[in-house]
Length: 177
Image (cartoon, rainbow, N blue to C red; front, side, top):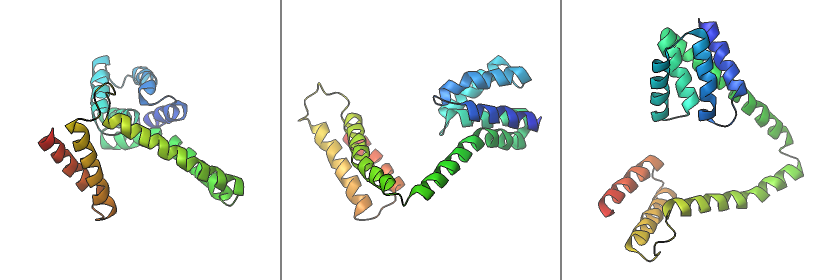
């Protein structure tokens, strides 16, 4: 039982491309092949996995492993689906560690910094102001910017923990909006 769980989710981990939702059909196929869950149980499991924090594929593997073989099954299935990504990250990290002194690699990473920063700023602007058709000079714009500036100052100058800043920003949002 444990070996089947491990190998099934290891295959899924190696073959999963396109994000967690793209993997759901592969997980369903393995579950049906081995008769681990009924169709209804599988659908409920995926629903719970989607609502839980973290990647849906890993959450699904954990829940299916737990329902199939208890805590040991959950650990086995999770290890199977996570191990391929872990191995790939370790190999890539080892490659970049060896190539770190290469001037071309250093230069390319320095060149990537501005574009990454730009993408983050772009995402923040579109997340903070999702409707460009509304007037930008609105009290909500200034309140949003104020919360953002205060959060930035709290983290950089006062070294507050990010979770504290997130909670305080949420409370400020409740009060202001």
